[in-house]
Image 1 (cartoon, protein in one colour):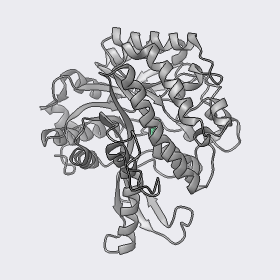
Image 2 (image 1 turned 120 degrees about the vertical axis):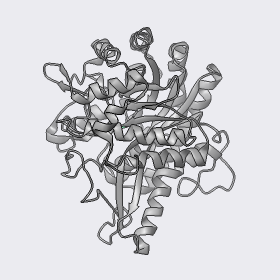
Image 3 (image 1 turned 90 degrees about the vertical axis):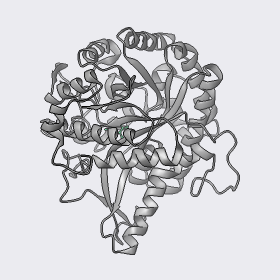
Image 4 (image 1 turned 180 degrees about the horizontal axis):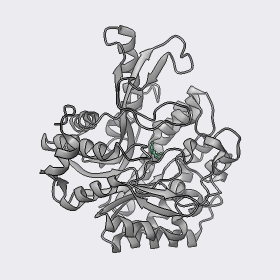
Amino acid sequence: MRAFPEGFLWGTATSSHQVEGNNDNNQWALWEQLPGRIWQGQKAGRACDWWRNAERDFDLMVQLHQNAHRLSIEWSRVEPEAGQFDAQALARYRTMIAGLRERGIRPMVTLHHFTEPLWFWRQGSWRHPQALARFRRYVERVVDVLGDLVDLWCTVNEPVVYAALGYLIGRFPPGQHHPVRGFQVLRQLVLAHATAYHTIHERRPGAQVGLAKSLFIFAPWRPHRPLDVLMTTLVRYLYNQLVLDAVHDGHLRPPLGWDTQPYPGLAHTADFIGINYYGRTMVAFSPRHLRTFFIHEFTHPAGETTDITATGEPYSEVYPQGLYELVRWVWQRYRKPIYVTENGLPDEDDDQRPRFIVRHLAALHRAWQEGADVRGYFHWTLVDNFEWADGWKLRFGLVALNPETQDRTPRPSAHVYARICQTNGIPDDLWTQYGVNTDATA
Ligand code: FCB
């Protein structure tokens, strides 16, 4: 069998807004009210009902042999008004996190996973001069209350996705096309990460603090065309590299910044790197794609694709060997411990997910065998949840959810993943059934 290192973390990942239910005090609640923003006008509603009863799903994690879980804290619950902290909300998070630990599930806690309190949002979000100080105040409080229960922290989830979808593509709030602003916001998120890094370490010197970085495989559509290659290089730089380089050596490179000196306090602010990996994207130069600087991104028409998003396109191309390539790249470039903080696919009928899991984990295993310090894998996600602008259309869960009745039905892949978690590796029979005759991951 393909055995993973001892103490490897096996879990799933979630975020507050997507699972808790009734989060009506953040910018996504506002976004939900606007016509045309979310698929079929759907609402998060009760979501997976975690605020009332996350423990039901914690029990499910135990049944499925998981030993870790990545979840996020909802800033708008903890600090509903500027400077006013809600002791009850913090107590609820304490109960939840203690509940995970009692069940033998190690928590990894994310501090910012796309959502922000309405007061913060309405005052300009990250563009407000006090934004970083405000974030620091929130992080201080969270770490003061939860720090003894948590030793793995993710500061910010997918800063590039937040900035690009909000300020370039417009699918996320505030729905703008304002690239300059997008890079300002991205810069702020990088600095917010560093602020949180130091805030946590001042209080908890032994904690491991990193961020969750979305990485894609970008490949030129026509490799013989210099412009396709150029665009691919540009996207790799802007999307995959810029933020990780910044937290590694402290340099805010263009267009994040223009200084030749590193930004104070930014270098070496990742004890680990979290990789969120969802597949491969083809890149072509296209004069028609003015709004994205002539970059046209799409999934390979001959590739294996996932379920379709609200925009009518597949969510992504399934490309397991990309996980191997990216883990190797991150390891060679940054030499930091690595967690796969998200990896998954929308696949409602679960005819792809078992193979997806086995093949991605084989790719991860190979990267580990070749020397990368890989420490854990968090599948996105446990139970179907509210998928942002795609509403309930995309089903990422190992377990199917009926949001009305809150009934849960494990999909076959839940059991496949459970066997891997239980054996701390990929048993040969699973490999034979789901892994072979595929790509370079073998
Ligand atoms: C990631 C997000 C996560 C979830 C998955 C499917 O980009 O971090 O919240 O939406 O995609």
